Amino acid sequence: MSDTSNEFTVVTNVDTPPVMSSSFDSENVLGKLKTAIQKKIERPMVEINIPERPGVSLRISPNITQNQIRAWRKNSGEDTKNGMDTVKFACAVVAHTTVAILIEGEVAQNDSGYDLTFASPEILKMTNTTRPYPDCVKAFFGIEPHIEAAAVAIMEAAGYGDTVDAVDPTMKSSTN
Image (tube, rainbow, N blue to C red):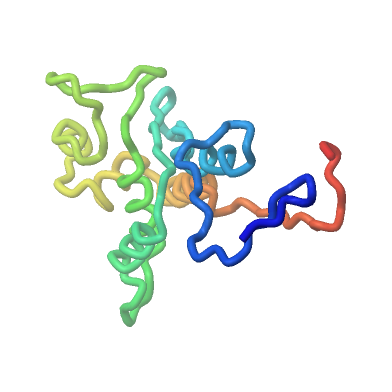
């Protein structure tokens, strides 16, 4: 039943919900939201200099999940009688987020063209170690406080130190 006496049509007794269009107009608010949500979120790579090794730095991917952090903490003894070994945790953060080692700004690669990391046989041999972490990372940095400082910088780059501002919805924005 319809009432067409006004400028618009009122439909009553409708059993089916309205059909939503699968195509979104980019000017439409819903379309803009869909575009924003579909965009992959990824933190940009960062470089960390090794203080005691001039010209040497690490390229880091600070895209870290809570599950990774939980695993690193557990592997560092968090739930043991002695508690978590913070240096071992820091080594795990550094080792697992390093995607390349650089010397004077150039990425170090092996003979096959792969970027070197703490798990690379060449780096393990250079540091005279067999495990990427904590042994290789410790030998590579040389000073444990620098490992912990690097881990903190990585966690901050990942966003774990960010603050999220609350917005008062009763306040008008400057764009309105």
